[in-house]
Length: 190
Image (cartoon, rainbow, N blue to C red; front, side):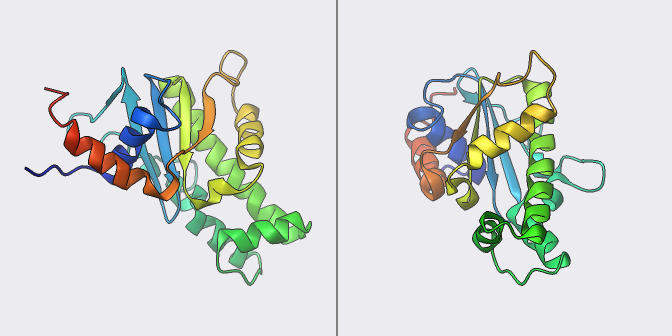
């Protein structure tokens, strides 16, 4: 037997079975890294859509460009470099940010803005119980609090703090764990 699935769908399966979303039936998962991947879970099952492509949130259009072209770690690094910083990764940018570097603060503010706008749009559209976020950048102390504060700027009362923001439990192993679960429990959807 063989089972194939999208990496973020597998990530969501792992988080829903035994990770950060194990107590929720309706949640959204995104991974923030080179791009932005997404998975939608309704009633405990991946929502796959008509052509099995649901959850491709990185391609969602924001005012200027695609979501992942504005809010991924790749976008953060590009923006920081465009502002004049000599950086190679998100960690370096956040280190400068923590040192009150003006340019790093601009780059991070833009990153949080676009990530929050995209997530706010998804909260308005799907109204999930939880939002699980993965990717190395989420390991930063205070990341979820800073992001949630920014998201709430774009949500009206009645939507603020309705979706619990959670850091992915399985971190970089979520896709692998989900692939395992996907194989073992492959007949549950039938």
